[in-house]
Length: 346
Image 1 (cartoon, rainbow, N blue to C red):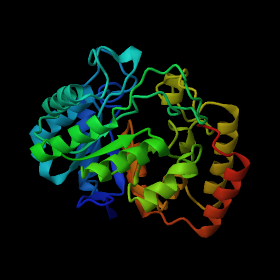
Image 2: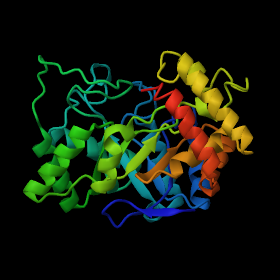
Image 3: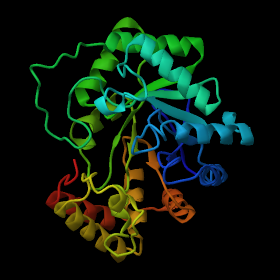
């Protein structure tokens, strides 16, 4: 396995991070434990989860992902061998069943974290992340920013940073990070931490794949210059980039078929771009999955590539991507396709 120093921290994480949002919905507890065991055997030491998971969020399954990881931690006794990251859910009218108030004030952060820790059966997290911003901005499939002059949101950044700093001092978390954030959000958090001599956010978890490289527009330079690396999620674009849909090897339980309303990756431009990437993979003797994940692994702003799988076959191929060295000809071809189909999935 390849390991990298995560930003300005002492955390040395595997470049492949195990994503877990299918645990409790598409994967049983036994399957989750099998994946966790195998990932550790292969040198993966970075596990990512969230208060919201599994996805899609439902009242009767919320928290199961963390509970499955918690039972595995108790059974395996390997808490000290992994770097464990989770998230606090952001504001959303449809998720009131998680907590009545989904804001990021001090009390909500404290309550959510205590619940995370209880489900995970641990007394600390290595990284605690804000799942998405409190304010209305462009994330979750929206590229352009339209300012809402009637927005009632009030800047709560200082209280958030102070609370995270307090949690670090108490030992409940080691570091904190952000997710689905914008350049303004990242810079605002960093400037507040510096101004008040508080713990800075160490990472940003945003979508990044061959169909959505919007991170490069404003955040890539910041990630490098400010040393706040990307934890790239959805690297296979809900499985579209695996090639199985184009090769007619998909089934009714695959994500794009199971959740047709989640249309971010299910449009004509995405399908055309993916076909072009499939052809590049075939030219270089790679599977579409290998090409897609290996490309992400080359990015200079990357902290970790968050892979996920519903089967052990998928998991093994995804983890193996760290061994692939893409030839320059393949990278050039990828860039040519990207120019033709630029960010078809925002």
